[in-house]
Image 1 (cartoon, rainbow, N blue to C red):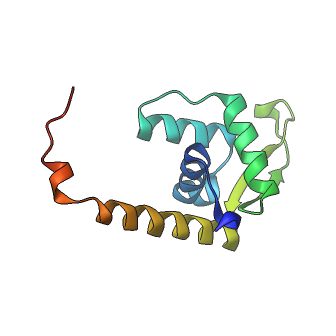
Image 2 (image 1 turned 90 degrees about the horizontal axis):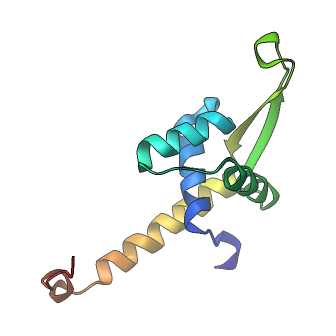
Length: 113
């Protein structure tokens, strides 16, 4: 189903926004992803993904007014939309179906590493 097509990074961003719930803003999302995934996350790639996901209707955002601590810069918070939740549910179901379809013989193969 094309309307729920997500790339791996987009899926990870949506999942992280869900984990952070009402505290999902750029730096918090980046930190949470890096902590959980044990890999670096580029600010540029994250910002591009957040904009793309918002354009697709999977996320919505709102700005908190800037404060002195942030030199007057506003903080943008992200939330999953109903469409975003549906996309994650669809992706989860699809992945589970594929995992269950792998024959047992595959799991008995010796690994190359």
